[in-house]
Image 1 (cartoon, rainbow, N blue to C red):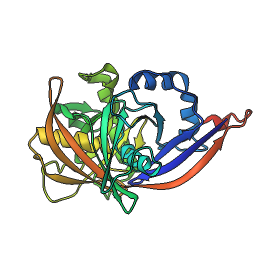
Image 2 (cartoon, rainbow, N blue to C red):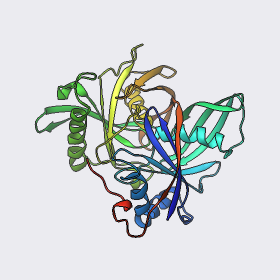
Image 3 (cartoon, one colour):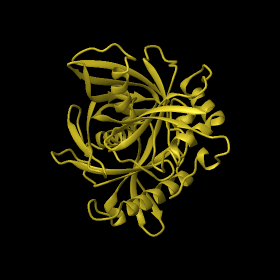
Length: 332
């Protein structure tokens, strides 16, 4: 078995793009392709994401044939738990990758790349200068505040106030100070434990729904913020803990989208205002509310999120027939 990949990172968050080695995926909708890969090819995700080739916080992308009219390419996202519905840092990387690999016709000063994700069509704008791709921004699917100003009793932490918002995936949003945490002072492990506790509790007790498809209605993770949700010139920090307690090194593109939806719904940011979001690793994304929209019964927004991706390697992976550990394992 041989799998080839291109490795990139956006704001420190890895993206392993599969370039060869997967069998053909049957035709169907993107959600049907996601289900097929999950049910029949999950051993390949483990080979690529898990040790000894990956690690607990690895992230990947599998390009598949698009189904939506106008889409230039389609992608399935993968991580330590399974397959997500949206990933902004991956969109930023794939936008540059698509231009560099000639998957779309290159145009200066901006090349548009229409990317079909499981959540819907995402439009990436890639800056191109002197033939080289640079920074990338994207407009995602309609994002909305699903539930604002909620509270829950969390053992060991007391009453926690939170929002749940959708930015291509659902996230719980909570001020980290409620857990006694401070960015720059406390360990990443402490943020992970707090976010995971909230995610697990809400998964058990807070049902979600999405107007487009039931497969989109699951809580992807929790984003702990510095509480600076009202627009200002200040940078706002957050950490996203998603999937199986995986830590995003970037500010999280879909998470920034969800935060913008919650901010706008609560009067914290207006159309046309741009905010800077900083990750636990110190990398930054820009985020702005472009216009209002609708998602079923929910008043929604279209957000624009921007960042920069870089290449980090190209690899060919093999699995020898008698190498059981080579099929993937995780230690934490």
